[in-house]
Image (tube, rainbow, N blue to C red):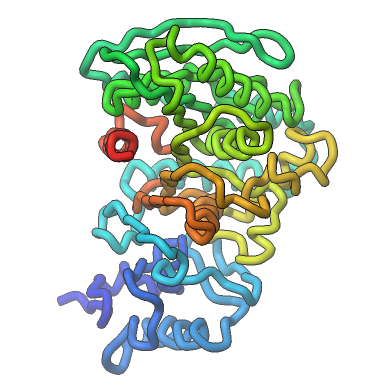
Length: 417
């Protein structure tokens, strides 16, 4: 008979305390629905393998230790004194959890995700960060672009027409693809692809856009904005905002409703989407009725990690460390709210937000901190965390059922708004 963990009921070999992880951590800890309490881990004397974690919880509630977790993937990590809060403490709104393989508590990646994480770990051993600094940025960007994207499938079941257009932009024409489902006076959604500001394409998210158009009943405009480092900040952002203005002005030609504009994007594209809301407010642009942010990168300055500690599973990755040399001309631009919207002083005017994060996404904490910021300013905010999944899981639409379920959640939010 296998030994089990007193509180969580997990087998001895799968016990989070045995692995040295803390409740609420991103590296496989249990996600409580209530704030941490001294009796979270055990209601009687803990097993020897659980005692250290039990003591760690007590210290987390009181002293907040600097060294709090040992990840089975990354080894021991040192955290600042201001540690991340538990899920029940973070959100002034409800944090919706989509179950992972072990149920709503998470703690274990899906098999497909585990395979991807193993490949990433192997790549890190072959090409560690200490070696990467000696490789020219242009070669790193070239490698990143080749690695982006994933073979996916069209999940649209209805008739969705596709049009290829070029629209006027600040520095020439911007290619867009427009996906139009059946209907009249439909809401218009502008989708900005991810890719770390340096990669990705409309091809990568074609089936995402078609799926949202079909399931959500929106006209989707897929924007092929300019990429860094060939086009530095704010070139790509200005392309995206130009597309927002163009869609509002030509809504009737598209068969859409000019009073119902939605912006959406994944990763870097989610950054552009929420910054377009900032620009529309500052410049008196078209009103945006909703924003859909999929595992958004909202802080390139590194200040979030300085305040809350690097996220477990990030491998020490800092968006600003690489972006400083490829996305912007000057490092100080990373603190510009147009680069790092998490640093915006006022977000009370922002449209309602749907923010989607993944348990093993290296920027999950940024997205959830941004959700907290919006909600604290009175913005209607809904946040969903997909346990067992990692960054860019939506690229597998039509291949992974989990990605298809995410499209359904987006369609549901668009329909309910």
